[in-house]
Image 1 (cartoon, one colour):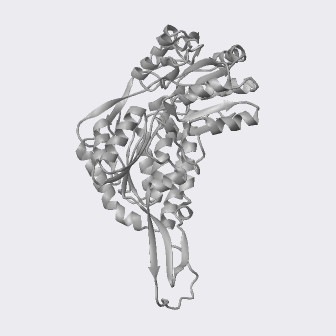
Image 2 (cartoon, rainbow, N blue to C red; image 1 turned 45 degrees about the horizontal axis):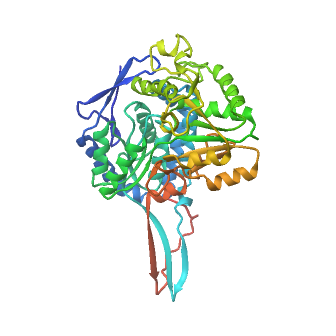
Image 3 (cartoon, rainbow, N blue to C red; image 1 turned 30 degrees about the horizontal axis):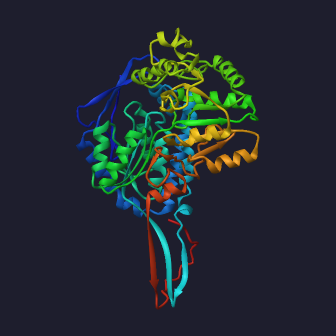
Length: 501
């Protein structure tokens, strides 16, 4: 039975005696234990990061990017092993886990360009023999607090850019699937990253709160639920930290009558049930504009009926279990709630067959198959709550305007999509919708790494999104220098070819 520890100053660390159980979601069996950090464990990790900061800050941009390039190659070589770890603890199928690793590596590749990303501005001769220029410098020790649903990708939204900018990093991953963090730590060490620049503290709320309060932590990045995001933002900023906290979502797909319904059905099923719906960018509500609702639901149901549900390590499986029994039970409770609220349960995920077992509700493990609720009443809890599981709600609307009003009236503003063949309607939608990430005939509009990820309203607390240029700005502070040099300086003669370093 495995034991997952901390990674502090380039080595595994036991920490104190508190632990939590790890589970295999496909069987429900205990697979190991993970350490839960005390305040002293967090302090040790922050102290290691603080001690490593001066030398790493002063390392050349070329050296930092070379370490990033080596890490990228090592991650690529170990991607199958990393995906297997994710599947074993989260439950998502191997192909989905591989996709997660690939999307995270896009941010590593973006961060490899840090010499270009940190270029400042320069104005010569702003006054007589006076020049002015801008530079960006790292904050110091920064922390990342990441969720269970993407144990590799979401940390890679944060630490590659943070460390490329010259910061040192403390990662607090989810205690539900922590093993990926240790493999990444070992690969950083193999890539030549100095000890103490990247640290991992496993843990729960005690570790989170200590990171938010620690005086040497200068910035905190968080991804998780909205209530916790609000707590992280309020607590961190109250302690003088720079904070970006990404919260929950309830993403809608608005389908206009002129849309290609086969494309819509494929997209709704893919975006609603990939990773068992445990994605903040999942499409969980389809707003079907009359008169297409009946035909669209029929196409969705046909596709759901062909999905294969099974363990993450079974190559035939397209969707795995949910991450824990408690979470599965919470998601499943919305099936009966939806019916009570007036919806029609057209596909019951409790009845779904599981590879190697029986019905989802009767098979050991944390199983719930794809579920479709039709005629969900607008404003009902099934419509507005972030269910975070394989439950797709179909809401019938009479017009574009009615659908837009439902989206803009919601609590969240993370992602949304419109499906139409009308370019004018799509352009109007992207202008009028109050959401941070928008897809046009694209169901999961996660931006590429060179753009920034983040929503509006209760989906984001703070002023900057993650990765992209906003990520670089979050992990650095600006300085403007005004200088006067009365005499030119002279160096010695050197006929060697100029080199970087």
